[in-house]
Length: 154
Length: 430
Image (cartoon, rainbow over all chains, first blue to last red; front, side, top):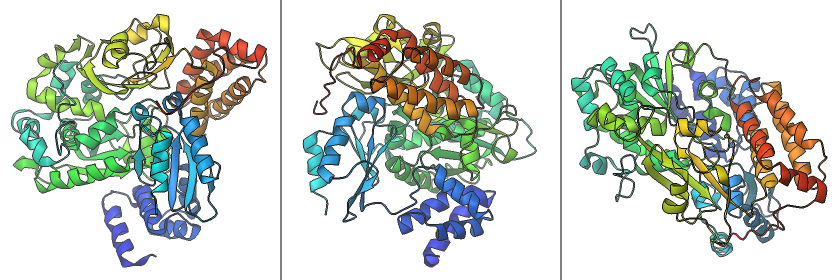
């Protein structure tokens, strides 16, 4: 699945552990990095490769919130709404982004460019409010900074 | 105080091996491998009084001494880098800015417990820290600090970085092991303790990132030096405090254990965010611990002083709230977190966390009932002590403390369908 480079990468990961099953999370990460999300066919492939049931893999994919069970937008915006961020205005940040993108938390824009979710503490409490755009943290946000960030995306 | 744990973080290219070595990096590893047996190293850590910085404050050297000295199976160290306790962001700083310090701590600790591998379990959201650590691990292998026959000593230890995928529960040590083995992150009953039967049934020790970064300094400078910092004998050493909320200068600050809370807020942190909005309450140890009212804030930030004050140092996530904070809204946010993060194994936690959130949501929305405050106390006390892991307690303790200490605000919400603190004004521009 996904070509020889992908399978070599999986083999390398599996070799790090005394038991293949331990590679479950890292291999699912490779799937998600390759495909963008984790579909059922990939879950079955991973199950076969690691010697566990497809139900076991699906159980893990549905347990860990970072595994995506459907495609997200090209830009996936995650806004922390836990207490420290709340004290520094994350609810207002969320509202601002909702208005700006025209979607509610949990939705994707019709053109597939943006998806946005509210998430729990991302460990950025001293630089609140913040959001994670794909892999990167953006901290100490103001409405202007959010606008600059989102407007500048191709 | 001289900065110890964070002495490198502001250096240019602090994450590189070259900069770390230029500052004396990996000398402690070399020293230990040449001069100390694993048991001597464990004894030195025991004597230093170092206590776990992940939340529980268990003496690190004592934990290590539970590991078998003549193991029949492989032994493992796990570096718990799954920092997820709301209000906590110290390990992220260490990993992003001084990864080799953490790795040296991992290697020394692995040596002490005779581990053949150290697994670093990092939370999935820390993508930047993960990349920094990947590079640092490759550098350490290339220089012979990790892998086979480390620095010619005959001792071998692998370093494996394992990335989580978004589950607070995996910061709990038994859930972490279950997750690392390739499962949903479900906690396990103790006993057996990890040192008896941990990862794949093998002897395992789990230490927090900040705990481990203390180890190279104790090896270099000795237990007596460490005992001179903080409040001997039981609250020793440097500590990283994570300051957030309504203060002028939030951030990670290093100071000895036992730093007065007011000094952290008013001197180091620059005081309250708005001078006209005085302090109302502080959560001193991450969202799991009981809240302190402003009147209770004459306390030192260490394990035993905070325990005496009825709360905990926890992960030293100090969340500061000013008088405009609605305590109903604040605890509703915390309860939501635990309801979201409960793994679902134990009924009291799975049902109780959701129930507390539901009751708090209705009080917050103005449809609370007179009996709701007693109901919350009852749910909290039925969760506490009745679950496999401490997540249930972590959800129950803050709820019980908020309702006890700020009951008038909850009652006001029920009676007036509004906040005692008045309309919410919270701009995110400042």
